[in-house]
Length: 125
Figure 1 (cartoon, rainbow, N blue to C red):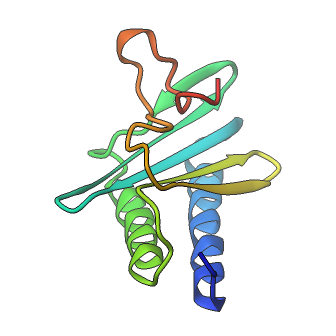
Figure 2 (figure 1 turned 90 degrees about the vertical axis):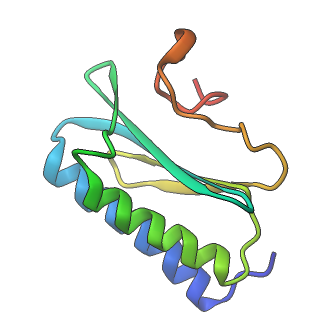
Figure 3 (figure 1 turned 30 degrees about the horizontal axis):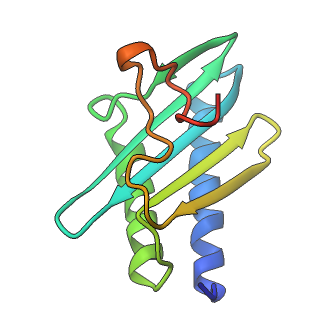
């Protein structure tokens, strides 16, 4: 993977979208996560955040505009040549962030509260 200028701009757009959304909608958050998964047939996204020691999974129904913007950017990044199966954006309330990519494992960093999961991407707890 050799990122170009547009790839870098898209990553910054992902982070800015996430930061703006979290600051506006969920005061007091400490960490936020956005996961985007894609394969030959489908794509999907999930997100969660921590606030006051509790983790909340963001509803795609209630927060549709956020998901639309984030998935559009993630799609553009992949279509531009960044190869991944899973993208994970992790951000803290200081607005420090990182974007990680997984090539092979489609289950990496799943965000769920089912079967005892915490809502934090699996493997980051």
